[in-house]
Length: 82
Image 1 (tube, rainbow, N blue to C red):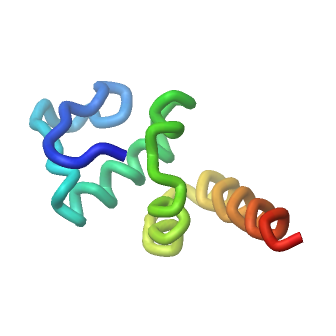
Image 2 (tube, helix red, strand yellow):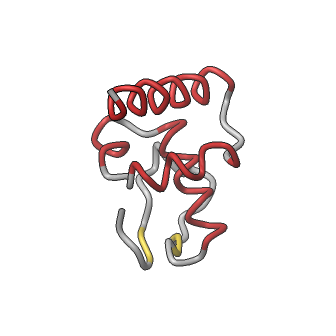
């Protein structure tokens, strides 16, 4: 995923017209949460998967979305170890 300042897509962040600083840990985590919740496939594909996996326990995602990602990473981990 990129770093620095970005202007997020409107369907991901509609509450502000300001740029987001992806070098700020709080803003970066918030942006990742927004992308996982509201992003399209192309937006999600731009995320750093390892970063998402590490942050997942801390992210306050809707239950269904969090469960989907937990299941994804659990199945990926099982395949990587077999």
